[in-house]
Image: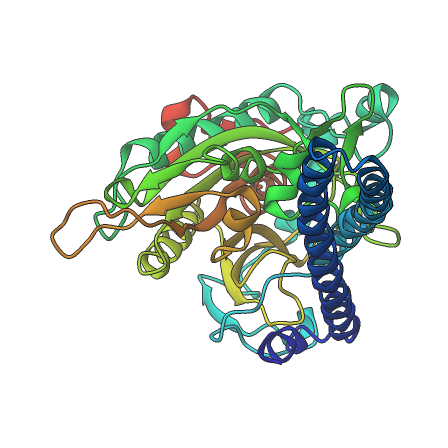
Length: 430
């Protein structure tokens, strides 16, 4: 009942039916297991009797007992197969049930109900006509984007950056990696360890984060090898310590990864896909952490602060949304979204989701830790870690906002000072 009430906040009536079905299957599974185990015990006893009777020369009695044993054994095997089938059904349904929302997540039905926590440096009246040009037009004019040839090479919703457009993308990536892997957080927390994980992973790696089986249609599957192209570095990072036991003394464990990301965008029909607004492949720097439940709030705040600080230093207006229960991601208990304002598109563009998953993902991935005892020594029992992650940053929409925001009246683009050490300060006009 408590789980039903919590999931009810997600505004999906089908989840209650799923829970009822799981309960029914689980009850039947327990009945079958009890009968099967009873038969196994009876078969063992009869088998001993068969040997005893034969030893005593009671051949007919022994043969009758053997026949009975075979009959019970066949029934036991039938029940065992039923038990396995029921277990598979239970697991299949459970894998489709999302995480319970945090008590602190605001209630709501969908994106329209997401509260705006804060808005940074936004004034809609300050933009001139030269900044109201969409990035796909600017990119074509200055040779920064070649969308037509990207489509020729790979199909629609793929992107090709060229010249200084590609250099800008690389500079953004290096800026983020340098920041996150060398600088402590605002609260003094440690820098993040850089990891370059594989970009194709096994099915169980995708299951651990909750991307499978729920979102199979939105992922690229390499059927020949049964591997999946990652939709985000969160996927391999979550399984970095799958089936392992960590020590609490080593938590939080923080990781940072740059990877390309691949998404089929199966649900994008009717959405605006022009330019960089939505693409099948994009670059992103991801932050990820394992921690204890007590450490989770501070880690969540640190990832959000790091993402915000990048946007502040890139001099981009942005806002922070607290996702309501009806708009939370499948695996998330609490999420803050960051959106930048792009004057050429005249819209807010999501560039980061900073999420706390509690033990939802780590339970799937079997990532545990040994808590410290009162004496400061590692105890014998284990607990499930909590996982958190956030984009800091996903680049296509940041790139778009930078190009639109910083376009000058002569058509050139003057980029913020934080990018100058990376060899790009001005993109000449036409």
